[in-house]
Amino acid sequence: MIKLEVKLPIQALQCMALLRRLPRNHPQRPTIEKDLRAWLKGYYGEKDADYYLSFLPEEKYLIFHGLRLKDKSHFQMDLLLISTYYALIIEVKNISGKLIFKKGSNLVVRQIDNKEEGMDNPIQQVKRQHIQTMNWLDKRRLKGLPLESLVMISKTSTIIETTPDNYQIFQQIIYAESLLDKIDELEKKYQKPRFSQKKLLHLSDTLLKEHKIAVTDILQKYQISQSELINSVQCPRCKCFQMEYFSANWHCPQCKSTSKVAHLQTVNDYFLLINQTITRNQFSQFLQIESTSKAKHLLLALNLPSSGSKRGTIYNLCILSPPNENDSKKGEIY
Image (cartoon, rainbow, N blue to C red; front, side):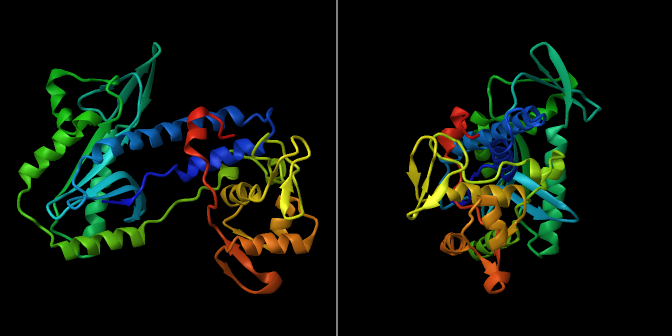
């Protein structure tokens, strides 16, 4: 059973929002586009893993995608499977080209298009996650469940190379299509239940309760000021800005289309780029709504979590309408 679904990473959503809100000639666009491609690549690698996981019996495994917990510092796992018999951490890599693992060194070299570049060793990365997860379990008195970890390469076209005296890495790194064989191997290794069903569900509830999504200060990361962003509501049809709200609809001055929900993406963009809270005044300014009564009506209709009262009310982060996945595949996300 999937307890935490694969979702577009918040960093990818932030990059999409930035690309929507920056002028086409902004000098940071190429860097942001490159980073977005990397985030999307990782996301689709995890989606590929879902295909193989769909063959597992739902009643036997609980599946968590993108689980982020805190040991001494926060750490995030691409994929965590738990059962009454054992748990498995999987670091998913959607990487093209050739990966060369060198014995006696944590260095991994990636070769692609006749170029070489160093990259973090995913085996060492998942080992750190293993240690942090064990610490997390120990502190919550949830010891006793065997914990395994491995790296999964989503593309079979990716070549993994090492020297003959370093072949033990293939016990820790597999291709996605071998995942079910690896799980079968672990089921033979762990045939005695270590947790009761009740304790497993307690672990699941605790994992979900302590899962925290990280929201990066994306403007600071790319050294962009808020004044460089394009305010106002974007037309979902022709993508121009300056939509106007009247007669209970948003109206586009360019293509003449109308929408009742065009402002949802703009509210998302504010939360993703500027702050995790918004006031009525900030709402009016970012959406470029001159009428305070219209702004109040639209903001209240969103039913956002809030604190305070009247003009001092502060509304909290809530992603209202995630981008269409098919659009992101077609590259139409910004």
